[in-house]
Amino acid sequence: MISMNLVTLLYLIASICFIQALKGLSHPNTSRLGNAFGMVGMLIAVVTTAVLIVGQARTGMSVAGLGWVLLGLLIGGSVGTLMAKRVEMTKMPELVAFMHSMIGLAAVAIAIAIVAEPQAFKLVMAAGDPIPVGNRLELFIGTFVGAVTFSGSVIAFGKLSGKYKFRLFQGAPVVFKGQHLFNLLVALTMLGCGIAFMLTQSWTPFVIMTALAFVLGVLIIIPIGGADMPVVVSMLNSYSGWAAAGIGFSLNNPMLIIAGSLVGSSGAILSYIMCKAMNRSFINVIMGGFGATPEAGGAAGAQAQRNVRSGSSDDAAFLLTNAETVIIVPGYGLAVARAQHALKELVEKLIAHGVTVKYAIHPVAGRMPGHMNVLLAEAEVPYDQVFEMDDINSEFSQTDVVLVLGANDVVNPAAKNDPKSVIAGMPILEAYKARNIIVNKRSMAAGYAGLDNELFYLDKTMMVFGDAKKVIEDIIKAVENS
Image (cartoon, rainbow, N blue to C red):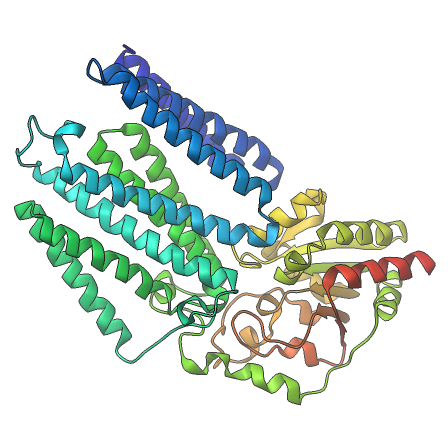
């Protein structure tokens, strides 16, 4: 049997690996090393836990218990590997939301198992003995946070996917009269049932509390839409961590507590950073965020009534090759077209022509935190060409050409110029200050926040319509012939 001192030491090493993983993932230059630390830490934790299960199992049950553990690892590992190999970069946000939902559901399933047979988890000496009140509190917290994470992540998955017609899965916020009051009523009822479970250990309040938590997860996500979705992904990541930590206390597993706390706290910090980047409080996001009123998407209809200056790929190539400085603003449209490799080739061509090229990244560009950074890293774009919003905003006014590829809300001047806009006060990439602006979009459709974009109608803006990959490839040909 493995000694508890050795288990503690191995868990400590795994925890250090997880901390180093978070540190490494904080910058693109060290992200691969961060991932490696995370994988090593998880391997140590899983193997240590599996050995501990075998060592503590009763005689005659060791093989069966280990068999179930190995079966779970085999199924989960196989499904995860298959999904990771098949997923496209445009589907990464949905995959992240799916993973969060699975963590939440696992927490609920474990809590139900503990309530049903606490003696199997060594919380009580024999069947029928009452679960300690402290453990009931842990089960209550782990269950409702896990249930909220699961159902909320399912809704986030549908919103991010954008291919389901069911109204709750639409990108636009779903609001109704008295929504906040109803949410409060559901939350208070859930809390009351949780307290009743803590006092009585009865199944009835536990089941009602769990069901209401699933409902609450749906209710707090459906009014969130538009540019708030990256924050939602980060927020649900935090929830999944706290759910795991709560169940870790019930299982008396320090590794689960540590790992869950790291995920929960880092997700909360990231959510705060992203809310700050959008000039929104975290409470505002939870209570509805951008576009939480029926009028939010109304501006999109005005786009067809206004004139824009459009051009061709040849026109764009002429501006780009005759510029001294170019800043490229990638957005979700670039990811949809899978045009990051073509974009890198274009940048190499421009640099060969003596053009200084930089990439500008907004914190909430795309559909999840760091979406654009991951996209460019996949194309092996040099990190020294990629700049965050705060580092590059001061350069737009001295830039000859800004090339906006599929971005919308993150370059919308309404955030600065229209105090009535739902994105008023949101820090943006100040592309409107450049001498010339090229915007590539498939159409004049609104961005995810459902807003018209004044940038498209400026005299110095030229719209180049079409699929981003096709347009970039045509620009490359024109550059080569220039």
